[in-house]
Image 1: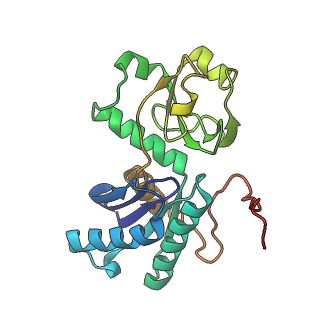
Image 2 (image 1 turned 90 degrees about the vertical axis):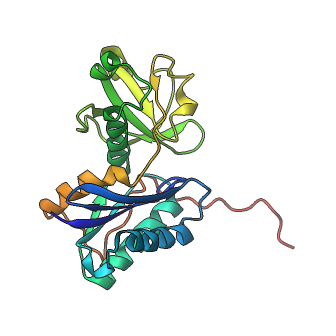
Length: 236
C-alpha cells in the first residue's frame, strides 16, 4: 500500500496523477503542445496542494518509461528521478503502452468506449504511439491487460498484424492509431488518450513487488536511437 505520484509525458499530453493504495486521488493533464518541462512541475504542485499531501509523504514516484517522444520522455524521467533523489524514495517505471492499455480497459469498464461488448470479448488491444509517417510504437495485449507480443516499431501496411486480425477483433487506439484506420480497414478504432491514470494500478503492483529502478542509471525506453537531422539552411 503506497502513496504514489505518477507522471506520463511521452506524447503531446502531459499528465500527472496522485494515487493512494492504487486508487486515483487527483489528476492534472493537458494536451496543449509540448511545454512539458514547465507543466509537469506546475501539475505536481497543484496536485499536492489540492490533496494536502506533502512531498515527504510520498512513497514512490512512477513514470511512463516509453516508447514515445524522445524529448517528452526525457522530461518526465528526469523530473521523476530528481524528485526520487531529493526525497530518497524509489523510482518505478511503467511501460507507456501498458499504461495506455490500462486507460482503454478503464474506459471500457466505465462504458465510454465506442465498442460493443461482443466485439470487446473477441478483441486484442493494440495501443499505438505515433512514430512519424506510417510508423507506430505498438504492442498487442489481451483484454485482461496482459502483453501478448513484444514492443515494436511497426511501419503499418495492410499486412500488419495479420495473425491477430485473422483470429480476433483488432482494437487500435492512441495518438498513432487514427492514421492507420484506412490501411487497417477491419480494425476497430476507439478514442483513447495517454494518461497518468493508466500508470496507477501498475505502479501499485510494482511497489508491492519492490520492482524499483536504479535512479542513477535508469534511462527511458526509446526503442529507436534518437537521430538529429542537420538543418538544410545555409549558415552565413
